[in-house]
Length: 305
Image 1 (tube, rainbow, N blue to C red):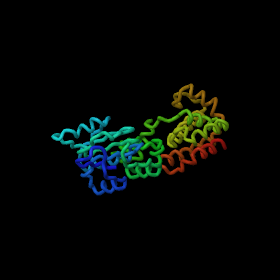
Image 2 (tube, one colour; image 1 turned 135 degrees about the vertical axis):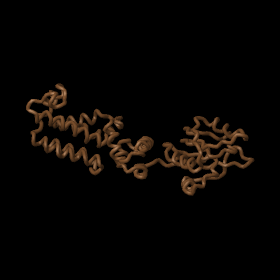
Image 3 (tube, rainbow, N blue to C red; image 1 turned 120 degrees about the horizontal axis):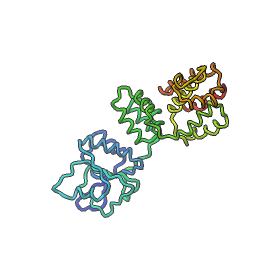
């Protein structure tokens, strides 16, 4: 909704605008006549994209307000020209007793309003992934999962990747550096331990948590963690006299591996697992593996040995 006032109006505007109409104006770079636009946008993302586009077209700075009153007051002095794009984000706004005369280039993002608004529908998965594809050459499914589908976090990570010569490699490095570690690691570590101990009952307990999304684990993290744990087991299993100096592991780690894991696999089985997990780790990093089958694949791979 674009609210416009004539001289005898003090409370409400009279020109409706849809999101599609606003889109056409932005695409045509015809935004010089915008007054007050109110978005109903719970996520605040779609509306923010339009606001940034308008500011870029008009070559104006975006000024953010925390309250309605100072925003309205910025237009109250006829001798001082408001030369910015103004934004107020609030849960609810009431314009019933507000004089909106002379307000231009101003946007309100809210969840509830007593005036007509431009409705911004919630983003769905494919729209978010398409947004990623338009912004970077990095794997969109991978970045989507790493960020849990949160569009604001995705935008933040895209800003980091913007100048990267190879965005996919940079994304993988960000994961290795732990930049996406705000996940429930306990579930995934319990699952990996159960695989190495061939604990079928524990695997059955962990799998539903992973598959249901209760654990927001990434396929990249799972494959890499599994690979690293397998390397440690091979160092201990294939070394006749494993020591911290020979394996790079602590005495406590060596003791635990020998006691709980080393007896579960023969050397040939370990080398076969290493070959398959190495290939899996590589394919996951390049986005080639259909990751919806990963947990089933890994469970079958380890428990069938």
